[in-house]
Image (tube, rainbow, N blue to C red; front, top):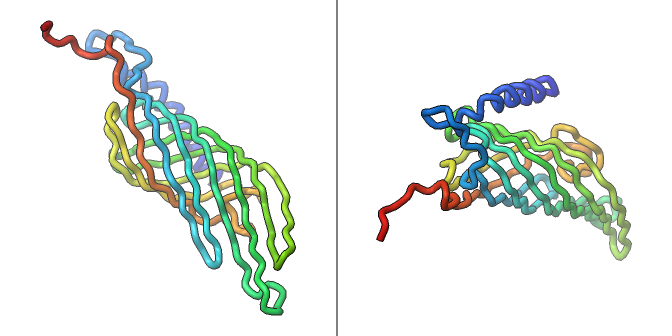
Length: 210
């Protein structure tokens, strides 16, 4: 799995060297940074399993480097809970929950217009809580994660996009907010949209004078 991830990063790096072709006109002039390639948006996440539930929000800001490649920053706000029924064998339940916040970067590649692969290294601060009857035990940790995801969506650079994805944490750090209490990664299901900024006045075609 690690070799596959490394190969994707190498491929993305090579492709990025050619992404500047997107910004050149017919005369070979480099147009440089384009405001209309900046997008804002994000996603909501949902995960579930046997006695578990997870929900969160992930605002993001990014830039379309090419017609097939996006990169940017993402921020996290997530909640996860796991209920263990009859945990001690005397009819009482134990509820374990976590709340985390953090952020990272993402690289999103579109091999075809409607399908994308995403890698997202990030760092989170997590507050864990175990509740049994009136007893509550709380602890706070931090952890690195690397989310690998595959998704479907529609995207028009300069206008907008929407997407749906499913991924898992590839690092499986024991304090990761994307693992259940048994240390097993659960699916990270997200859906969201992005909106591109309007082009600057200088880049807009001149209209007829009134």
